[in-house]
Length: 345
Image: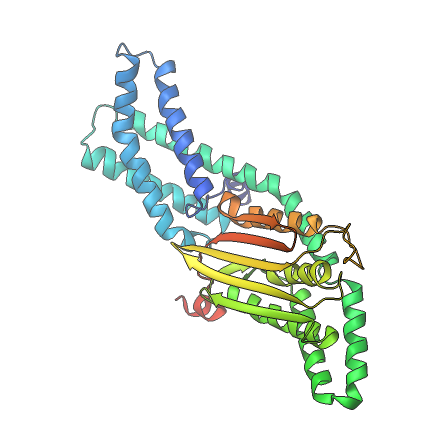
């Protein structure tokens, strides 16, 4: 069994919900269909062989992609070895249904059988290699997230604000410390790299509540437009670092009040997030506390999105003379709760 597990560890089941995976599968299949006739010793013309390959390959590929899309969320729950074995068996069953059952292929059935095996195993080996190549980046992203999540000045200023409120406004001091504890509990949370949009909004609101107590509700204003499902899966601590950047670079750098806008929406199975904050150029006379750019945080965010969603996720920034925006697009995936996993729902 250890030998089998070692061999099967060289393969991985790709996420068929991912657009990048789908594009790679189609492109490689087309290349495979165009390349096979070149190494064939058949007397039939090249394009006739391409047509014959496409006649059984295209419907098989379409059925595999549809099945993989529907059952991909269940495949991720399986052990890696069992997932690969199950996926390969499903591919072979679908192939037999198309090639032998639907098309009634008899003469070249075993030739097609070995071709589909080589293609499927080759693609799963490629996916395993891709995942292994991303592991160093994933470790680096986790370390970066752990070391740069909350700036020390925010912690010290928040504690000083709580101390100053204890006598005059004890309720506000208690609320501030509770929010700070919840926020740090989320920061130090281990385990899954994913969260839900509803939880992210809650943590973001707790963070902004701290900043409003610390700096004053007049100076720090927030507008929330939350119009997306709370159960949508997102990377862990997606919003709070972006809001911290918005406060740090957009409001603390001037003496003027500032308004931060947070918008979420869903359209055509895509999740859209927008964060907008005031922006004052570093060389402006109004910028009394110029800071370095936030490119590192945004680069870390893009890396995390790439690791979780491949090319499906997009993070873009827009900058004008007075506004800085971050726009994020994610595929909508429902985050299953622990109770769902426990009872198999």
